[in-house]
Amino acid sequence: MESSAPRPMAARRPATPLSGQAHVPGDKSISHRALMFGALAIGQTRITGLLEGEDVLRTAAAMRALGASISRDGADWLVAGRGIGGLTPPEDVLDMGNSGTAARLLAGILATHDFYSVMTGDASLRKRPMKRVIDPLSATGAVFTAREGGRLPLTIQGARDALPITYRLPVASAQVKSAILLAGLNARGVTQVEEPEPTRDHSENMLLHFGAELTVRQAGRGRIIRLTGQPELRAADIIVPGDPSSAAFPLVAALLVPGSRITLTGIGLNPLRTGLFETLREMGAELTVRNHRIAGGEPVGDIVVEHTQLRAADTPPERAPSMIDEYPILAVACAASRGTSRLRGLNELRVKESDRLAATAAMLRAAGVHVEIEGDDLIIHGVGSPPGGGLVETHMDHRLAMSALVFGQITQAEMRIDDASFIDTSFPGYVPLMRKLGAAIS
Ligand code: S3P
Image (cartoon, rainbow, N blue to C red; front, side, top):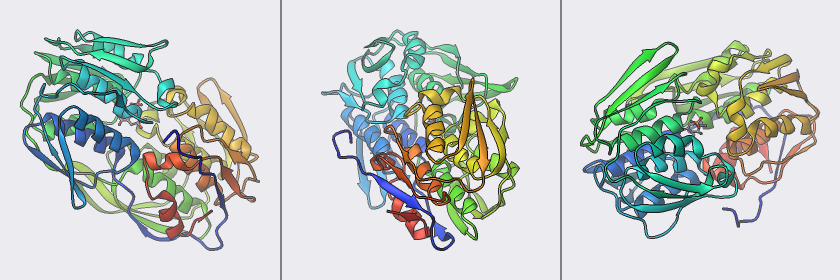
């Protein structure tokens, strides 16, 4: 990805409202986990609806390099697992591309496999903190070396007789929680993770789906998760719902472009992922969920959304984990609302694919919107229809690129982005899907 030429793009107001029906690609978090847990199970796992984005393909390549057999079968994917502790040493460096989830979860798996491996990533991933997983995972007996500041490339010598960990997360991170649970699968005894705020629970759901012994107990606002090590995971089929974090882009576009009405089908509605929908409803949005159902152990539904003039937002810090990836697009909605919004407690945004707090503020400023960062809060002075006319630097960050292309649908002058190529990490087919709904992107 890094060597490919940048793909600049521009977005402007469409001549007609957005309309129609669309199905967004599979959930990124669930797709990574399906490949990883499938590779650790005994038997064949069939995955329907896997996200075929660059990030997930990196996970597939890494699990293959570790001995799992992974293939396509029509539109489905098949994983023949090696069993807990059954992966084999990779012959080459594991390159996780742009994906923090792939890198951190894989570090958990490698920590309790008794062999040596090396992991790297692209220029964005090589800047991101890995100490948050290295510190707890070292307690298993694994030995890590990293570049200064705990950055990739990373070497890992997995523990021989791995010890189970008891750990309280210092930051609300599903990636760190999942890395510890994955390590705990091959440790003797009970691994315990306490999270002060609940974060996405796809790992817990999938472990139960594969027959692991796992309990979750409420503890204050957070949760305590206990996993018994060295279970036999039994392969189980997985249906991946549409990614609510991807649905957020067409959804907000339809909310903002006057006269629009669209339907997004088969979207994952796990309550630990739907903070954006809750916030948009508080801002006055009409979101109707139809066809509510359970698919592959996760709640799913079709969302109908139509244009609404939004009010400003004031979001509490404790809601951040349930919409952590949605702040750039929420910021676009706030810029198009009337009034001053305050999005609170965004410290974790600084360590995403880019410094998303600074980059989101810069995106809004490029459109002439007045923005401030106060501590960890983002304050946005909404103006209805911002002037636009700016160039957005996307910093190898797919969500900034997609947000800016939505923004251009309502700014007075067009918005340009320096590079759309990273969109493929999470949402292949984004531009054609948006165009089909009526967005103006060139
Ligand atoms: C993810 C967790 C979140 C999120 C990321 C996917 C996951 O990261 O930002 O896109 O699949 O566990 P953190 O857990 O680091 O907040």
